[in-house]
Length: 118
Image (cartoon, rainbow, N blue to C red):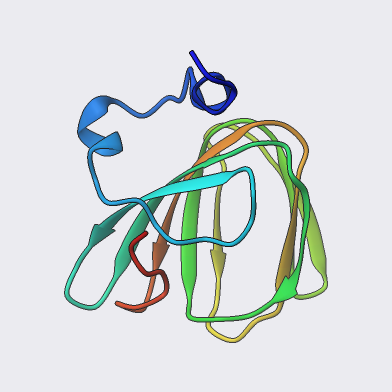
């Protein structure tokens, strides 16, 4: 088994999710599988402890943590999120994240084109 296969071994997502198209994302250590709707996108993320994702904004986003820990700053408020926690980021609100461990999260984006397919 190669190093990249070992890196993604043990994801919480079953084969039916991993068979979805992967998203195009420029950050090493982040992988996502896309479920596309007419006006929305759902991404099943598997994120290695990549550290900080800098402040940015985009369409509205809602997510739920399946495993791991991340520190998420939405506007001026920073909270630690763990398994079972959910969050909502309104459209245009600046946010950033710090991935403290391997994180599996499901995010719903209020736009049909937030991510392209790899």
